[in-house]
Image (cartoon, rainbow, N blue to C red; front, side):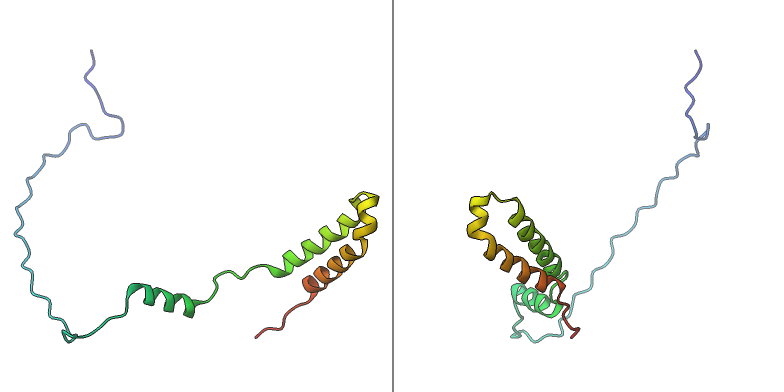
Length: 110
């Protein structure tokens, strides 16, 4: 039987050299620059201040939602049964107009 050969490795490995034992590092005492009676803000206060300073990461897509709502209200006025549509026709038209108007209105940059 053939001796086992390893694929992609050297046939003869290099002899391992034992590592020298390293001495443990000497730790120096940490000197604090703060006075012992200093009060620090809590972690929750720091996080709240950070979130307030950062603001919203991704603004909510109000324009897209308003356009979609306007389209849905407009389509609802066509697909509802006649008995419901007779009652809800004008409120649906008003909601569709307000939603489409809000969706098409572009806010000015601050």
